[in-house]
Image (cartoon, rainbow over the protein chains, first blue to last red):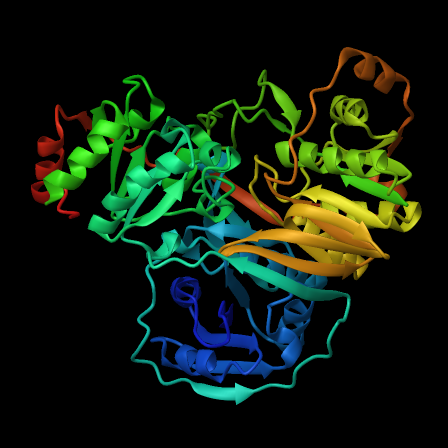
Length: 310
Length: 249
């Protein structure tokens, strides 16, 4: 039994989601291999070989893997799928985009966003925005799985010494091409990897007003997030969205400011270790999941909090 | 150019579902059902493309129980020209739906299929990508903007770091994200008109597709509950609790 993890990377480095996926793969019971499909991705491949618990790294290098187009990466996975018992990718925009193509071509069901491995063929996954947990058993010959990264600790980035093997790159599928990318530059930690998140909702009122959260995020070295309402209103960019259909996060501290707490938002953050809610409405549903709540005007409470933190 | 839009009947997004006491699933008896919100966005996009003269026909498709006809009627009230129901009482997994849609696409020959990126019941986020693979078509998932020009679809996608734009040769698959558009409210005259639009019903057997589930759900349980916390009177108390009790700062 050998599991194959599809590495998420930007050619130069691995994304943290890969390390969490390795942990899930190891729990499937056998050896763990990692596939790095990229362009000039030797640095990412070298990083993969260092992950504790990985015994082999497959590298497929071609210019048309540079941007991770689903069509090409899926074909590459299929080319090496061979005798793997499990194929896993992180349940991020990257993994979700690619892996169902692989499952369909292998004629197997995909098991999405697992949060626990109960047995090599049995997995737990949240459904209905996390309001229920399904225990799912697969009798397919290959288990194709996306992994909710908050459900598994990250495998250590060092300590491993896997062999690296170059594999032949498949041909360019040629039906899609990369045009461009707008990536927000930020000095803050990445949302899904941050230990502390300061998140704002509709109650913030405007894009301008979101600045009230910045000193707090600075002070705590926190990532900034938002509810769907704040994103839809155009206060902040889409990749800040925390929730059922946005990012799933589980930091040690989640500070929800001006967020009422719709079930779709709670689905994205209720596994946080400690939740603080600041809201002027004492009846807001967010208080039902918050460890500590403050009822008050966020424009007074937040600056006061910054001051108190010293 | 013809566009196919698959729509799923799901528990309304405002309903908080309850897990059945025997652990066999969630209780959806007597619960309000609606069109999956992402599919509504897909239909709106197809309808706007038709209104802009880029598309000639919009066909809504649903797979499932007979009541999915209501979902299709809603789809036709938004703007679909006709509907196709693949009727079955079997609980359908994304792979089975993708196979049914492939069979319909082979028959209907659309140039574009727009789907919701995920259904809010099983949260699988698979069907569009699976359909693209089965058809051998390119895909643009999580779309926030779609432009059709020169036989291509130029699609902006919501990805983890921001936005990404890719170009696809047609025919192609697009799956919708929340910011693609804001679906219109269906008006009473359009609901009346939708009742007269053609709705065809077929069975999975007619399409030669085996929809037997591959996964077995052993049980469904409630998630671990967070114990309710406390309201603190002031910021000083909060900071002290975070430092000494929660030890997170």
